[in-house]
Length: 81
Image (cartoon, rainbow, N blue to C red):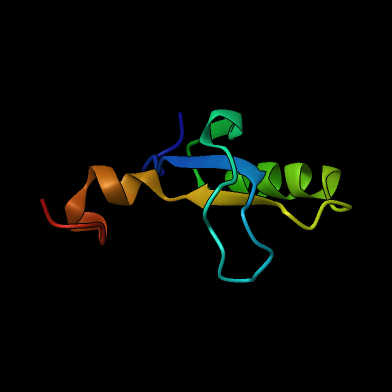
């Protein structure tokens, strides 16, 4: 096992209400796709890129990397609880 600290990242995606670089409201939350959970950013970015490339023809589809480790550990720069 590696000495690197596990940093949980989630990759999700779905169709958005509007096409905008700043948009993040999903059209239908029931249809949001969970791509996976990854222990480091590089693996999450590869999964994100792969999923995004599969839907490149749909401008409303968007995939996101969620830095869940920041939500779980407030001392890691996430929200204070």
